[in-house]
Length: 259
Image 1 (cartoon, rainbow, N blue to C red):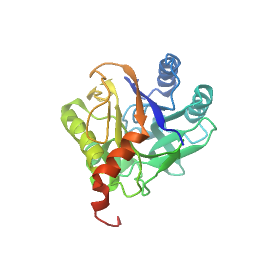
Image 2: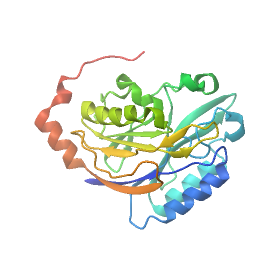
Image 3: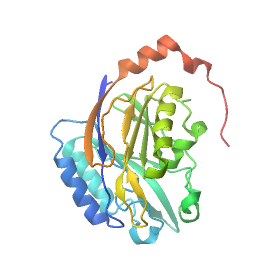
Image 4: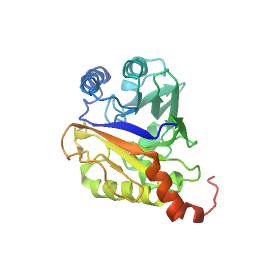
């Protein structure tokens, strides 16, 4: 088990519906990281922006973008995580992939599709919560709108890290800031959120506000809004264990079943 986990948060603009250009841009950004990290986190739909034109940008799990993620993970000896549009049969998914250096892939399909943008009409919602065991850490990956639903995120698996990738618009960014802290506090875990910046193809503006929050709700990053930026944060397993053992709030959590 690894006592520390170093995570690179990449807050970036995205080129609208252009996987090839986005991959080129992220390659340069990742190559600029000089320190060894364990996990590299990209935003939601990092190859396209938050598009409802699924057929234009969709790929399979054997497509160029997934192959790129495998190559980057192997080259950096890190895991790389982000969501993209995946096609399976007649269905499209907003699918998060956690790709390890070995080539092993864990995936999570966004459960709460964003009805305000019509995502529920284009993308099939996921049904399974995923816990990733990586270097002795338990990571729960979720996507954007999932952040508004605490029951789905509830820590019944004793995970250490709650990880969100997002295209969360500037107009509602105060909710993003508040809910990231709430999810960390109520689940006694680190909470990481990586959001994009810039404007998308339908003129929505994004300020980023990417952050890492500790068990007590303290922000441990200093990423500036409205700016492309990479920040590396070190998570400490001891921090999680000490406060869970001292405060024992999770011992009093309610039992429930999601149907």
